[in-house]
Amino acid sequence: MTEHFDVAIVGAGISGIGIAYYLKQRCPDKSFVVLEGLERFGGTWTTHRYPGIRSDSDLNTYGYSFKPWVGSFTATAAEILNYLGEVINENGLASHIRYQHHLEAVKWSSKEHSWTIEGVRQDTGEAIRLTCNFLSMCQGYYRHAQGYTPQWEGMDDFAGEIVHPQTWPQDLDYEDKEVLVIGSGSTMSTLVPAIAYDAKHVTVLQRSPTFFFPIGDEDNLAEQLRALDIDEAWIHEIVRRKRIYNGQLFARRAAAEPEVVREELIAAVRQQLPEGYDVETHFMPQYRPWQQRIARVPNGDFFTSIRDGRTTMVTDEIERFTEQGVLVKSGRELPADIAVTATGFDLCVFGDIAFTVDDRPLDFAATITYRGTMFTGVPNMAWVFGYFRASWTLRVDLVGDFICRLLRHMDQRGCNSVVPTPRLDQREMPLSPWVAPEDFSPNYIRRALHLLPKTGDVPEWQHTQDYWQDKDVFPAIDLDDPVFVYR
Image 1: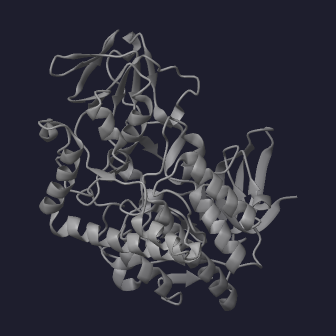
Image 2: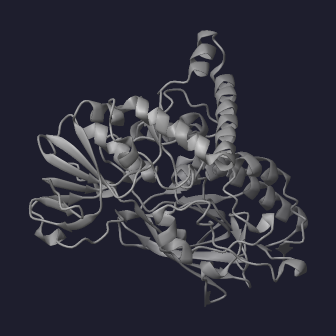
């Protein structure tokens, strides 16, 4: 027999666990299952095992609204996994999660008003087939199996080892080795200080600079409140609100006065480096602040490794790999025993699963998104795609609440399905890419923009990437709005 659930959640990372919590708390009459392809929960925090792996968002907002984060401003992967494990155990979610379930096809039937999910159990080879009324896609946004590595000339000639952080070998010996890290973002600045004092030397080769936040690892307000013996739940809420507010102020300033914010960020980096250091070449980006994600550097540890002479920055482009390292376009050869390609990841759309609606293949690039979470022509489905300029989990809270309200509303109306559909006056609205390149332009988005849903020119048909707007808009969504077509 085929198992049936009211809701199926795809993914047991930060998004899937959060949505499961909301279903358990707010829709206790609904049956649900969480399908995870990996052997354990955690998503990113399970697959990424490179040295120093930690959050690049503050944990007061990366943690869920419903569970206080007690600890440092940033956290290691192990600490985050422990936190997620506590959420699972405290809320009885473990029995709902099924691991090593690789999904291959998801099919909607308008006749049955349900999704059929097919795949295979990777531990046994057994076929998977189950049905659900509503689908919550929480599978993340990149391919876990491998990261993005450009193909440079001469890679086969290199006598050393080429490693991507996403598939870091646990037995990799970098002690007393020349390590070349290719990349400029958060992964690079996290990895480098973790290996710089064991390696012989670390050279960072970047094509262009990134903006950085050199920050402390503690929150003074939180520590003051703890000294006053304030309840941790209150501390969590107060500090969370402060960080959300400060984040809004900074994002607005970055848009309104980008040159002022640019100078502030660069000045903060300059203070971290030796006098006379070539900041203009290595730490002065060509784009405006927040056009790409700003990398956090807790306690300035990445810059400490530069000051200590353990790390050297090189801003140049790769001409080719050689037997002994990498030749850059300026003519210099950078020696390396190990080359680490911290060059990002491959974005995948909805887990690379083959979707069909009434036996017709579904091309998500041909759909229009409703507030970045539902899609035209796709019934009974919601997606979690988090924020670039704020913590991913902030959107999990909003979407979790929205899904539960929507499910209860459908029950009240006696409906089996819902699909967002532009009103008659919106049918000819101009369409734009999922993210406007002039607003946010990281390479992983640009490489996959043609695969992502479109947006319209009115607010409900946009993916705003603005948490400070969404936090007021999502709870106020009128579920009887004509854009929701119920059957």
